[in-house]
Amino acid sequence: MLPLLALFLHCLPLASGDYDICKSWVTTDEGPTWEFYACQPKVMRLKDYVKVKVEPSGITCGDPPERFCSHENPYLCSNECDASNPDLAHPPRLMFDREDEGLATYWQSVPWSRYPSPLEANITLSWNKSVELTDDVVVTFEYGRPTAMVLEKSLDNGRTWHPYQFYAEDCTEAFGMAPRRARDLPASGAHRVLCTEEYSRWAGSKKEKHVRFEVRDRLAIFAGPDMRNMGNLYTRLESAKGLKDFFTLTDLRMRLLRPALGGTYVQRENLYKYFYAISNIEVIGRCKCNLHASLCSVREGSLQCECEHNTTGPDCGKCKRNFRTRSWRAGSYLPLPHGSPNACAAAGSAVGSIGRPRKDPIPKAPVATVAMRGAPSTLALSTSAARGPGAPSTPQPTAISQGLWHRKVCAQIRDWIPLYPQVDQAIYSCPPRGELPRAPDALQCRSCGHLCCCPRPCPGLQTFPAQAQIC
Image 1: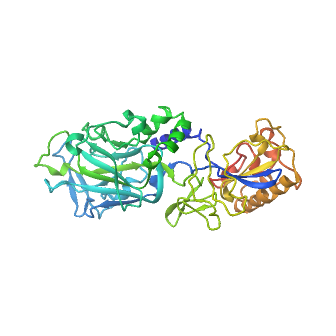
Image 2 (image 1 turned 180 degrees about the vertical axis):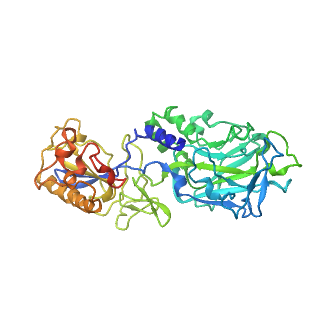
Image 3 (image 1 turned 45 degrees about the vertical axis):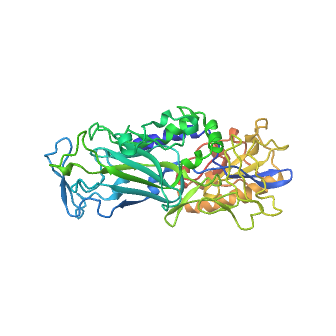
């Protein structure tokens, strides 16, 4: 329940950034054409798409079976780990499973039975693609948080690694660094690597479980504590060198260097109470698509951007063939509020050359426009008159707009209907040729009679794909 609430609260401030549509098919006096906008995918739980690797190979408990003790009662060693018994095993996948109320499942390491040799473990999370963190990384430890650990990131699928944050009970002793907090960083140092003592000191194994990498505190340096000044944040992401890349990665790695000690020194007479146990890892973010895609899907087991703006690649990082008359550029959040698409262009083609920021057009005779989010299943119809502040509430149809509406919209509705027989087809049927829907602010769903122009969900809408959009 808490991750759902965190995701909901995180989405509220981001609603002020208008980067959810990549292009619109607009009709102008010169004829119909595409208009491109900077766009990005929605925020999601990245842990649902991660591949995990735990090293070294024998670090997971249960082979052979063994018992464990707790810090609270080191002489009550009733916990057992047995890899051959599903009820007693603690494999790595339990760091990402869904847990019932009051029942924690967790990965667990072997105990520190070989002390004084270090008990170290590496936990690597891989997405095989660039992603951007938009909220805190939260790791939940059972039976105590590590006394020392390092969070690292990779930008090249694990070939090279860079420190992200250090954690220690004593930063000076463990890493030779003065302790700092992310919320105290200056604007010029928001992407600085630091060491924190906030998540390593002993407070009881059941009281303090979480270790955080504070993304939100760093973003709040620019967006404010309530994350309401998103315009300033987007401006800084474009202008501050290294800031955007700081939140970008392909892999995360936790290097667990020293387990919880229970607030004391290592007690050699009972080494079976020293181990690592992780019940959950929460990572919130989005696919990095360089502001060239609003959708991200899973293909062949990996996340991949659904590229627009005549771009291609897992991150939309290059121009399509025949669209290379100008060098590839990432989209930009600036100018606010809609940014610049920096679309790739074909020689002598108007498609791709319309790289202007989105604005509210006020045509001489308002006509219908279709906002396409990259795929037929994510169709949305609006009117250019609805976007124009001074336009009349009822657009006047033109011959071009009538034909455009039927070609681009009705054909796709007819494709949808057979797939969903439980939907009342009369509700979503297309109007006769020559008739256009009324403006959204004067529209009633049943009187209109089609999905794409309704201002609110119609009966049966929930049976359409989750990506289906309405104006």
